[in-house]
Image 1 (tube, rainbow, N blue to C red):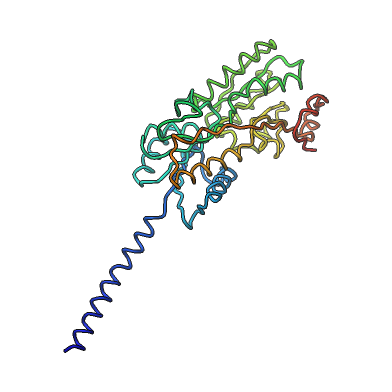
Image 2: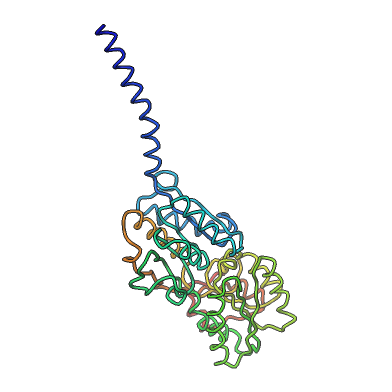
Length: 332
């Protein structure tokens, strides 16, 4: 009898333990935080460098994707109208933090939640864009990194003027689907163009195909040089831009070095990968308990000017010694 009772107690204990195992496994699974990553772009292949930089930042705070943090990626396929639904989907999955890879994604996430922390990376002024109350004290549930790409339009136009002082007609390329950046970029460059008495032409591209169409119109409009705005659609198409600029024999200045490394002529701006790396660090800090309101918006401290001499030769351009002396890097 005692033996029977002992055996029954053992089986009951075993049954209780067995039923507890799935519960324990589920609890462990639920304890793994999930980060939602949202972007206007098409896929992680297109955005591979920046996603890798973001993951590196996360890992520096002790979070390794697939080990102790999960990342749910949502790509808008270059269609900003899809962003609100993608943000809502991430919220329904109860992500711990939303990482927004660009301004439209950040605005969609902010419109969708006032409680889930949001970490953005943007070229725009986040105060003017309505993301944060101030750079030092963001307030609310949003913080992040600005690369100040929009505010450098006048500086880039000055570099073009030094390269081609005889130019008359300058174009700027913007994405109307990203109106806050497009409008700020046009306003900044219009004032700078007026100062040197250049005529400014506004070119637009909402899709990859429209980028090619914009370049095709350059000869027709007799454009002497081009500035490309710091838009995520554009910065994901480095090779396309470098190829089209050579094909249409137009000097172009860009917002980041990625273009120049694959054959673009010149770039002036911050290191974009550094910005995504910092966004990863901020995301990790929030997972550890920091509040977005207490994390000041990070601003760049270093700007880099990169020139591709081989492309200059292909275009038949001579880079003035003054510009060569200013360059942080010259690609032969």
